[in-house]
Amino acid sequence: MNPVGVTVDPSGRFVYVADSDSNTVSIYTIAPLTGALTAAGSLAVETNPRSVVVAPSGRFAYIINANESLSRIAAYAIDAETGALTAVANSNLPTGTNPSALALDPFGRFAYATNTGSNTISAYTIDAETGSLAFVPVTAAATEVRPTAITVDPSGAFVYVANGDSNTISAYTIDQGLGALRPIASSSVRTGSSPSSIAFTVTIR
Image (cartoon, rainbow, N blue to C red; front, side, top):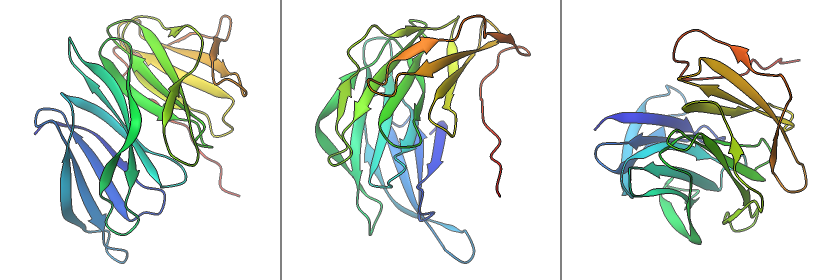
């Protein structure tokens, strides 16, 4: 009920859908020749999953959950044969208030969640071997009003956030050692009304 986020694993074999009102993540397998989807089960999660992303390695998935009293990010290991998800130990951590979107850097080192209730970005490091999460040891980066979408550029150097009530996109640099975000001075640009998604073009050579 009320699917609000969808992602495909890097191998192109599995699809994951965050079902906000049924508190589940639905799992599908992809037919390699036709692209048809086959239901492969679901995972019960905490209240109101809002976004699900898969690490570039294809080994782990990350899910954010949001309501007024419980806002979390959680890590899961992916079964390479079935696509099933299993919780990673000690990797269910708080976010800011009411997280709405989630992005990983292209190397699978860092995770970033936008928090519409606190106008911040929560940052985490990712253990490449276990998939576990840890807090980036700095204050959460501030955004403009109601950050609704986030993406990391293909080089892994910059983060861009769409701010739904400010009608802007803001930009940040990534500290390549810590994963912390630093606002790029005077980089905010205007958008149309209530931006809700953001994406990059990719040049194929």
